[in-house]
Length: 290
Image (cartoon, rainbow, N blue to C red; front, side, top):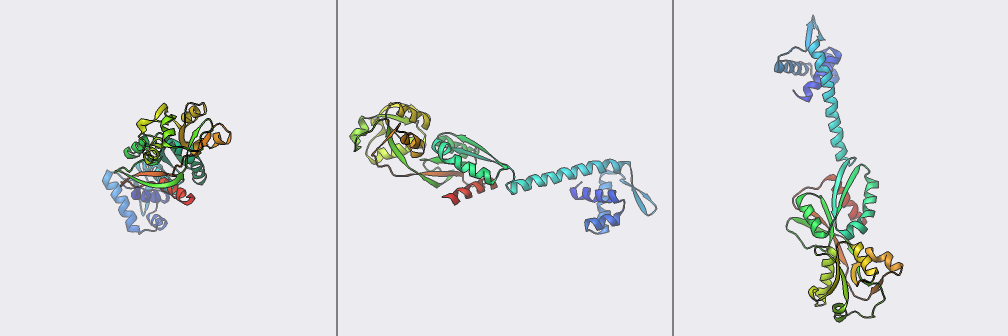
């Protein structure tokens, strides 16, 4: 049976009259009669008793009426559910972000997004850039937001914002930073695979320095751990201004004069996979802001 047959049956059962049901449904009387006949024939039952020119719902029809109303109500609920997704009244946006983006740049964006679309839940995972790219590739996340990641064949990658990085340490440094100073300094680095690490290594490449030449005091898995170690005097680091801004203002860190070009934050999406309406709305919001 179809939902249309059930709707016609309910209309006839509630009125016990074919003509009035047809008028209520804005279809022909013959279409109503054909639908009831098809329903009865398919299941080899009678739903109505014929009393003269009138029809009366019988026991089978009364049993079906209750179930038909419930089924139509459930179908209407499904329509409302899908309409909610279409209208961004409900749904889930699955994001993955690298640490600098996810910990410092993204929260304000998420707050604005939730204000605009309170019915959309946001699931966010924060990892290093390589892991974020992996999550987007496998479908664990619908969108990725990273810094310093090379192009990948299975992902679309585009710039979403600029970031600025600083060379910092706990004490004031020299008025000029050269390759000799960099090679002699103690360094606190992020782990391999992080966008911050790859951005720093790109700076080293412009200076003709192999990362293997550095004296690495510590390699740590988060920006916060690197910042804390540098504040404690473990060495120098290159970190985003988003990460070190408050420590600089408080005098816990000092910026050293190394010219570091701005870097980009990038969005990642799987090639050939359509974005959800929630993802489209989030990307549109980012584009408006930048």
